[in-house]
Image (cartoon, rainbow, N blue to C red; front, side, top):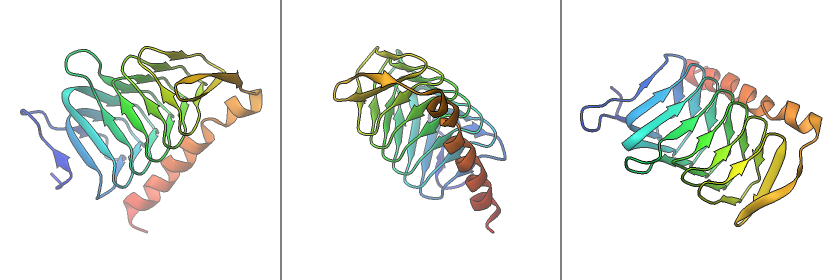
Length: 173
């Protein structure tokens, strides 16, 4: 096991062979990561007091922290999700094809639905739900506007790019 993958209370993170975990990222405990996903530099994915599930082709960008609440809120991240740099993702759900902008915080019980976006720097407070096709931003985050069809269609293009970039890093070429 590499130095940045940590067993906690007898539970070791598990992930597909195609997952890229940067050497400076730490993945701890009850964490499962799906194929083609990536955990970038200086991230912490800490499944110590609850579980973290990350789907396929999702990316967790540099400096992001993913954590959970003891016994109440796991962190669930679906397929083709883009989580920007320096985010805090805590005990929440990011559904398939959702987008969390750089520096955003998403707290316990919050849900970002498929095709929804949390703006950079936003604070999505506990138990809020960002509906499909909406952009929420601010602190605390609130509805800003509907996303255009083009914006919704492009939400996953960043996830696809990062899945491809991760394989280049993983190959060492």
